[in-house]
Length: 149
Image (tube, rainbow, N blue to C red; front, side, top):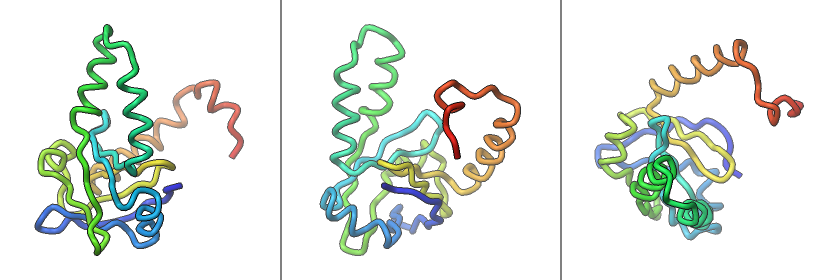
């Protein structure tokens, strides 16, 4: 399980270093083979290859007769890019994906259980503030109302 908020830096070659605490798990789980793709919130998603293959199979199996399904398939599968972790624990964030997510030097790597999200640090701070403000004014869906924290 990937959890936590991690500040990482994008180097001049477009690489980020995966935090040390995740590296061994990623090497064991997927031999450092990762898939990066876009998210509708204009961040990037980073999956270990086996976790991505489950998502990809579900996306491919969806009926492609609806515009929403085709749009989601085009975005997620179409932008899916293999990113292999090097010996120093770094991965290259491809230029088109960096542009899509407006990534600059300061990046936030957010653990989301089976995947990570990559956010521009400034965008992350802005969106997090927005989300915190929204929780007080919105009705929670039924599946969240039953969650006890």
